[in-house]
Amino acid sequence: MGTATEPQSQSTDDNLGLLERWTRGVVNDPEKRSRLYRALFYVITAFFLVTTLFPFYWLLVLALTPNSVIRRGDWDVTVPLLGEIPFPTPQGFNVTAFVEVFQQVPFHLYVFNSFVLATTTTIIVLILASLAGYVFGRLEFPGRGLMMLGILAVSYFPPAAFLIPLFDAFLGNAVVVPFLGIELFEPPRLVNTPGSMIMPFSALFLPLSIFILTTFYAQIPDGLEDAARVEGTTRLGALFRVIMPLSAPGVATAAVLTFIAVYNEYFFSSIMALQNQPEQWSPLVGGILSYQTQYTTDFNLMAAASIVGVLPMLILVVVAQEKIVSGLTDGALKE
Image (cartoon, rainbow, N blue to C red):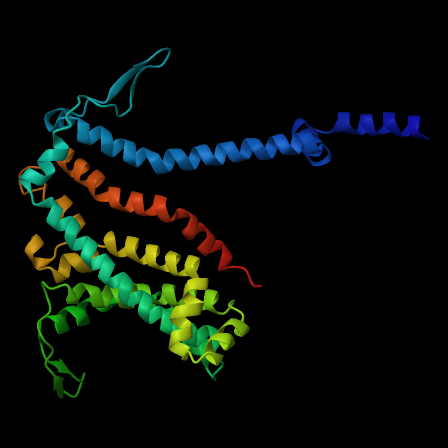
């Protein structure tokens, strides 16, 4: 029977196409399947490395190349067998661009503005999200799921939807009831101040942090909190002394994601700061755009400023990458 089956299976394989034979071999042969997985891993990793690192390489090339050479646009490189192909390579070694970014514009003040805005917003978001995460994750009350859905729905709205009413309110104009014309109150003028940026940032990035912390706080065993309560700790004390330390990866994830998002934000900042000046709390991106005027654009300085501005975020991600990864993965698991 065995000898009769082998020729039959061999003849069947011969009738299959090349792709079908390869597919069957991968499915049936563990060694081929392992090689396929390894090859796919290398291909996908190489793709993401190229697409992720190439913009930084392009910025470095522009920063090191004099602006006059950049304007010529001569990026052709001679490659054997292929001839000249366009590929960005440094056309000089102008490291003084990294010094000029601070001499031509007070770029350090723009970086400081973004750092202050991001730090303050992160602190506010963490405090409010921790309180809300404790309520949604550890307390039972009617309508909890509906309220959480309403909070998450805020993050679905585009920021532009809130721009006009917020800008009108931050200008100090009186708040009037629509269609009735009844003046409720006259808010203080907040444009060109950190408050006009921190409040919208906190509202926009709060829902995601609440969702992350709710998931983590719900996984903490009730016995740990009960033990702290027996010792005389209040619910608020148990939150900050027991639950938050045990949920450190989730807290770190919410903090880093909020900080990076605010540090890179420019939409609200460019409007709430009426002029692109560091004294009016214009952020990092505003400083980068300062090297572009009506008649000239210093591409090398813009690239050098972008590299300088991204370095704090790069250091932050490298230091906190373990917490971020564990926070994003652990928060998806139910124990």
